Structures are given as C-alpha cells and as structure tokens.
Image (cartoon, rainbow over all chains, first blue to last red):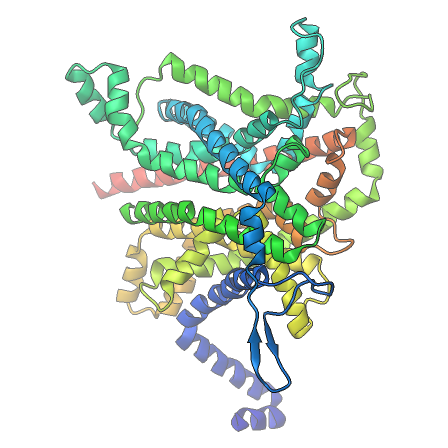
Length: 320
Length: 280
C-alpha cells in the first residue's frame, strides 16, 4: 500500500500505470470470483433481502409513524433485547371473510383461465408444429408479436370491445340479436377474457417447444399398426407432451394468481383478486403489516407451483 | 416433427390468431375516430394524434421510460451475462444452488410481491443509510434491473449451452490463458445472445406498470403509469392514438429483428453446407 502512495506522489504517470497494472493482475487472478460476485451480490441485496424485510414487517403492528409499523426488536434501558412478534395480521387474514374469499376467488379464476388457455393453446401449438417450414416460422412470429407489444394496451383494447357502448355490443345491437347492451366490462367474464388473451402465448410457446422435439415415426408406427388418428393422439402424443402442458400451465397459473392490472381494468371493483387487494391495502389504506402478510400468504400458496416449475426447467436443461 | 395438419388444427389456429389480432386492429382503427366517445364513430380524423403530441406530460413520460429502459437494459445485460457465464461455465461453486434459485425466481414471481418487497427495501435502506433519498428514476431502474437480469441470464445460458465448448478447449490446448479465452472467444460468440437479452430487457422495462408503480415517487411517471392513470377512468381516444404509435413501432422493430435473424440463420446454414462439402 505504502509502495503505491510513494509512487503516485513522485511519479504520477508511472505510478498510475503501475496501479492499473496491479489492478489488472488482480482482475486476471480473481476474474472468476468477480464474475460470480457482481450478479450474486445484486440478487442478494435486491431480491433476497427484501423478502426478509417483508416477512419482518408482516410480524409487526401498524402504528402512526414513518414508516408505519412497529419495531420487531427493541432495546430497553437495561440493555435487554425485546423481540415482539405479532401474529395478528396472519390471524386476521386467515379468519377474515374478505381475504379468505379473495384468495379462493383468485385461485378459482387462475385455474379456470389456465384450463381455457390449455384448451385453446394446445391445438394451436400442435397446428404450428404440423405446418410447413415457412408457415411455421410465420405462425410462431404471429404468436410472439403480441408478447412484445404493451401488455397494458392489450388489456385496454378489450375495454373498448367489452364496454356497454363498446364494439361487441354495438355489433350485436346492429345485427338485431339484442336490444339492450350486455353488461360485460367490469364483470368476472371480462377478467377471464383478459387473462386468457394476455397469457395464451405463455401456454403456446412451451407446448410448441415440447412438441417440436417429438418423433413423428412413433405416430407413423401407430398408424401402421392400425391405430386411428384420435386413438394415436390420446395414447402417444398427449402423454409425450405432458412436460409441455405442465410448463405452459404453470407459466399461466402463477402470474395469473397475483394479477393486478387485469382485475383492476376489466373487473373494476366487482372482482376480488388478491393482487388487487394487496395493491390497494398498500396504497390506499397504507396498512403495511397487513399488506406484507397478504404477500407472504400469497407467496406460500405459490411456492409449490414455483418449485415444480423450477424442477421441470432444471430437468429440461439437463436433457439438452 | 411435421406431418399433415388436420382441418381442426387449421381452424383452431385461425380462431386463435383472430382472437390475438382483432382487438388490436380495432384499437388502431378507433384511434382515427373524430368522436370524443371512443366507440361512437364520428368519421376519420387525426385529431387525437394532435392532442397527444401537444401533451407535455406524455412527452415527459416517454422520455423517462426510455431513459430507464436504456440504463436498465445495459446493466441487466452486463449482470445477466456474468450470471449466465457463472452458471454454465464455472462448474460447481459455493452457493450455486441459491444463485440458480435467485436467477429463476424473478421470472415467475408475481409482480405485486416483487414490487412490494423492493419498495419496503428502499424505505428500510433510507432509514439505515439515507439512500435512496427519494424514489423515482434510480429506484425504478434498480427494480427493473433485478428482474431483467434474470431474463438475460436465461437467454445467455441457452446460447452458451448451444455453442458448445470445443473452440474454447482448442484455444486452451494451444496455450491461451482462461481469461484471454473468455474475452477473445466466448464473449464475441455470445454477442448475439447478449443483443437479444438487451432488447428483451429494454422491452420488459418499457412494459412494466406494477413494479414501477410500487417503487416510484412523487412526480416520476413512466409511460405505463401515465397510461394506467388515464384508462382507469374509462376509454380515451388519445390513448388509442398512443397505442397505435406504440404498436406500429414495435411491429416494425420486431419485423426488422426477425428478418435479420432469418438472414443470419440462412447464412449460417449456407456456411455449414459449404463446410460440409469442403470436408467431404
């Protein structure tokens, strides 16, 4: 250390290059650790640490202060550490009718949406796989393109379609099928449409990736042995695409459960979903401890599907 | 695998694509509507584009969003590439399981949870060390880097796995130092993956509403925050105009990227054919 200081004072230019050289040598020796360290440290501070803080706040009480929650650890004058854990927030969430119903409704909406996505997405993915090389490329492009355009604006597009004075009602009235506009916007039906519309590409792409690797000779063998196409599909193709079905379903189910924008814009105040409740608990009521507890319970609900997804991703990576 | 596409599959594809595109086409058509009420047709007009361009609020939001997206994409690509390298090329190291978990979790974490936990972190940090003094550009950018780097890492890992290690091994056999191999061979070959990662990170940042809403502060409105605050109250013709501009811009960019990738792939296939013929 003193060596460097002496050099910099007497010969600034040579000293600096010496310092740079030393630094370069150190980088050369330690570069592997540096490569791991930077993203590792970033994720520890900005991804993992926040969860511990949320968990901590979920065990606190709301107080009128900034920030509006009580301290978990307090030192008394005698130097005794007091740890206060308040489980009231969790008891409140798990017994309160509103929260209970909201969690249940979120799960119901995301499970039904996932099934609808699967029923639409599976034949679409299969259709893409069975297209010629050029058509395949174009169809894939058509499925991915909406994914790159703004999510918010795609939801907004459905507001225009579903509104009381919207395109669908105008069309139905013009055709003489209805006299009064149907109430579609701000209903649960609109939320289903929004979720299926937004997350359908997430179902199609993993299914496509899975089906693309299937071996067509299996189908041919089944046909040669006298199996009808429908029978072949259920006995050969469907079982082989189970990994794609699981990956696609989880990619729809997990984000749909915590969805905020779609229930807010398309469901209005009429559809209970946990993401929206959490956001409102936080911004409108500023009840941080309860909001944190809501987040922890949601996380616990989703840990199992998230782990399954990671497991399958890991297995798929190993197979490659 | 490809074989015959049955009529049922073709019909499902047609319905699915119509479902994808009709809402967006209608959104674009209604942006040229003169009427103030979006669904009531009042004749073709560019009126709402004029209204949009006069709004300083919109321009400020666009500028802020683009700045955040640019800084985010650059940092996320850097960190995501390092993370991908570590995961694919470094074998076992201490804490690899935790690292791998933290790299995948942001991809599937519900946005409300990520947003809430980051806001809580920023507030706690301010109490502890006085930073960040106020929320806005910096906090949104940090939040975006945190989830974007995971996406970049996925792309980089896929590219690294696909590349194989033969060239690197050859260089090492010829006496190159590992660090030299990294900078002279691995990184340049990784460049296409890094570019895709950068573009994805840029788009993800421009698109994010929920996380930005949590970690933003007074006055810092990104474009999605501005759009959301307006459409919450109902349909607005100027938002249709803005949507049209965004959709056309994205479509053109994606089409160019797709064409470039298509030609690059064709060239690689040709090179491969030439190489095969030369070898035989």
